[in-house]
Amino acid sequence: MKRSFLIAKDFLNLDIGNPLTPPPSSYMMTRTFSTSNKKRPNRTDVKDPIKLFCRMIQSRPLPSIIEFSKPLSKLAKTKKYHLVISLFNHMEILGITHDLYTYNILMNCLSRCSRFSIALSVIGKMTKLGFEPDVITLSSLINGLCRNKRVFDAIDLVAKMETMMGCKPDVFIYNTIIDGLCKKRLVNNALDLFQQMDRNGVRADVVTYNSLITGSTSRCLLMRDMVMRNVVPNVITFTALIDASVKEGSLSEAERLFHEEMINRWSIVPDVFTYNSMINGLCMHGRLDEAKQMLELMLTKDCSPDTVTYNTLINGFCKSKRVDDDVMKLFCDMSERGLVRDTVTYNTIIQGYFQVGKPDAAQGVFRRMDSPPPNLRTYSILLYGLFSNGKTEKALVVFRDMQKSGMGLDITTYNIMIHIMCKAGYVEDAWDLFCSLTFSGVEPDVVSYTTMISGFCRKRLWHEADELYKKMHEDGLLPI
Image (tube, rainbow, N blue to C red; front, side, top):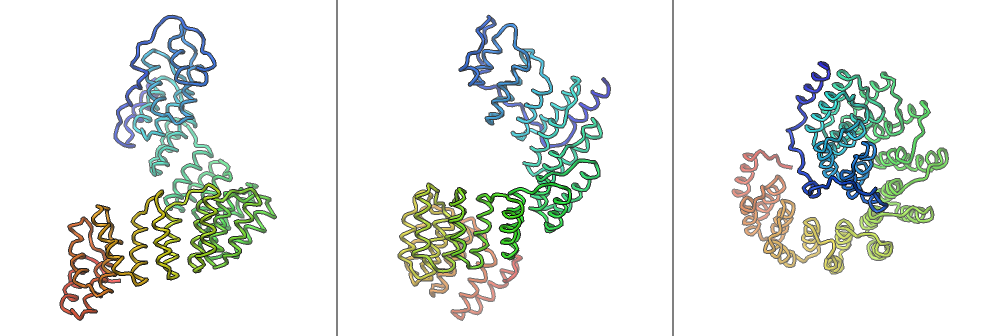
């Protein structure tokens, strides 16, 4: 009993965030429940876990804790975490004794709500009541901490649970932490934990290797080790390998992995993410017709393309200045397939039309934007595109409209306008705009300074250029 009390106290003192006040009881907790006997839950109640719970707490005698765990579990699966916490508290008020299973449901909900201090106090309470928190209890908390990018807190907690309670981490816990470390780009730490996992006799699975392959540069070694240990790779494994090869510029390796390894050797069916990586690689290397064929292959294999698929292809065709026929066909196909054309879609096409010298077509696409509405990136493309196509006055009008609308402009937008004004010979206007940046809540960056200095130099305003150069150094900015 003394040991349980000390463990409970130790968990209550763990520093994993500020203590949180328990959530308020839900609307249904405020009503007065009758103590008279009620009918058994009907089928409608079983489908509605809240109604089922209401009937259960009015029943006499009260149902077993196993029966109470059913509505709690259902609500947790529908992500009504705060409600589950309230129901759990209400059960305690009614004197209903919980078991390890319901405590684990509570731990999952607390972790999902990032209520880590309360979760730790619950572990302390469980121990004090004689319950031994198991690997499921620990998994919920570890998962929550890693989702909140608190990986080292998760590692500390695992060590404490193992030392104090002998609760040894399983493959799921190791995988969660390894994935969290890889997402924080702490791959060496992840590999160290991977080796510790092996020393502790916990067998790595495909999930372990997928996280490491995604984050590490030693992908080939990991893949060989994986196969040697008879861990079968899956679609996520190969998608990670293919995507990494594409990003490194090794399209031939990506093609080998896709055709020879994934499909021919392992008979793994590519998914939309695999196809997207391959399409991206082909577009990056200007092999647009093959990229389009990859889209057609997807369709024959009943793999539905998504918005990313089309945006990647549209971007590839725009960069190759094949805007008119190919891009607009893809644009129309998206609508026919019920895919959402997002701001990336519109921005890419608008920029593509400007780059091929078709400002009217670009403005036409811009005017079609309603849902989604244009964002700052859209306006930046519009401003620079108008200027690049000899429509400086139109760009100035658009910019003034943006200022009047109260839109929160960023430094990129201001830099584009300073550049446009300087290039058009409106250096004084550009200087006025530069001086107004601080009043607009935007600090000039190195691009703002160098653009303005270049504008002064074009007008042979050497003194002004020199003074601004000194000011740039005073502000701690280095020229580019």
